[in-house]
Image (cartoon, rainbow, N blue to C red; front, side, top):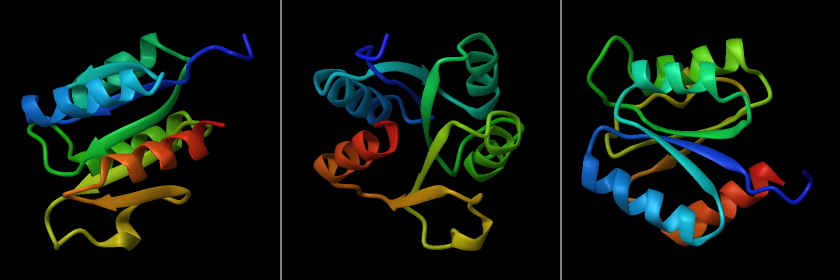
Length: 121
C-alpha cells in the first residue's frame, strides 16, 4: 500500500472553514476525515489507526482546545504529524507539542498543502 493516499484528520469547529480545507485537500489527493471538536477527533483517531496527520484549530468548543488535542495526539499516537492553526495572536508557540508545526490564520492553502505533503511523505 505504498501508493495509498495519506489520511488527514481536519479538526475545525467552523463548518465553512472546515469544508473549504477538506475540499482542497481532497482535490490534492488526500483522504480526509473531519471533526468539529477535539472529542470527535479522539473518537475518530481511536477507530482510524492510519491517520498520518492531524490539522487542528486551537479555539474549539468541548472538553479541550486544539493545543490540548495536539498534546494528547503526541502522547498517544507519536507517529502522527500535527499542524496547529489559529487566527489569534495569544497562541504561545512553546505550548505546541514537540515536532508539531504552527500555521497562523489566515493561511495560504498552497503553502499548507505543501507542508502536508512534506509531513506525510
